[in-house]
Length: 522
Image (cartoon, rainbow, N blue to C red; front, side, top):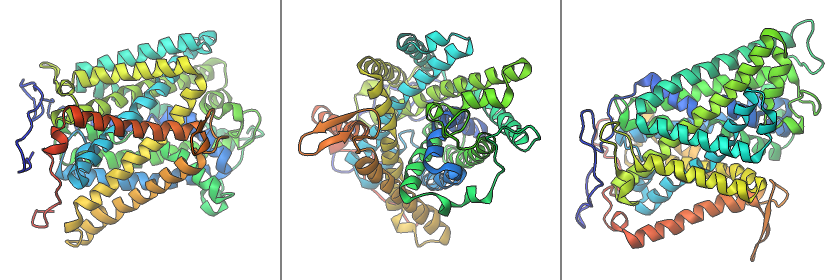
């Protein structure tokens, strides 16, 4: 990395120097394109995301759920191209932290890194809880699944197990992801095809509806408010593909493969979500009773009830229903693991650049993985999960809803960083203008709109979510906004503390503000 000329280059944390260790000590060339795509897909937890979100989307927009999932793909693809372009110039595992620092300065970069960390820690609580609940349901222990104590215990165990897997090596993590993802995708396809066959069959359920062109017409959505709320929910199901880029320093052809994997992952997610949402609507409809996707009590988990209705509960159908539960369990477990990966590498990169304490920059001499960054992510996730569960299930629910603000913050920041870093080369060619400028800018603007609309309108409504807080000078405010904005403000406070205690990153950053040189080869 180049160093600024106004001060000495900061020292870096001790690094591993074993065979295969890269510049920062991580294991280079450990992942290929297929493994990177698997990690990117698994991070989004397609089965879990659909189970938790499809019902919410249907409640908001009805039969237009498929077009909303398709439209939500567009800003994600735009930001994926921003990641691809920035990674081609600077394949640093800190991703948004490093890129935003290079474009806007060390303070903006620090907050970009914090956005990744806080979003991942918050969502880990929900993933752990889902894994705990579905683990008990899989073996028929429904009473344990309804117990806060036992699901919390199981969730903590899941976090520990997945942290340990991430600790012992990126290759083991990638191999596990390929197997878990294979089960997940196969089961989603089987569910979708079976649902469509039964919806068009002679013994179709009363809720069945044949696929219509209006399902893919955004102008048939009831209102602009319903459309935006549906988009906010749908954007969440695409989140996670950026993990493929966060392991860039451990990937073969680090400047090309991670970016390609990110773009391919988002396209594959589009195909999966469109197929499942369309087939589920065709079979179950949007009714508010029984298996209808608009049923309020099923909105947080539509796949369990849908699986029983599609496959049945006896014989081989019962086996498939159980396998569907297992699939959601493995989806949450896989996402738990792949959520640890980007957070550990973000804090690791921040440590090597002296933006956080140096201990987070240590690498295991044999496994060539971040040590304290990985362990720290596991411990922070456990502490957050246990604390919020002990306080209130309502606070936990609202904290999980607030994760969308963190996602929109750091994804949007990456889009703007791409445009600003490449500003001097945008007129070099039409391709540069489109993929380094127009596409990332549009993605950043869309996510900025979603962030502001959600934070200061939808989520701020005291009736939204499960909690509300009476803020001085503001009044009664929805708990989702308070938690989401509060988490980002906390990052600002921690940044000031780091600046005061160890300020070399802020005074003499080794990632100086710069812009792409037009003389460089495209």
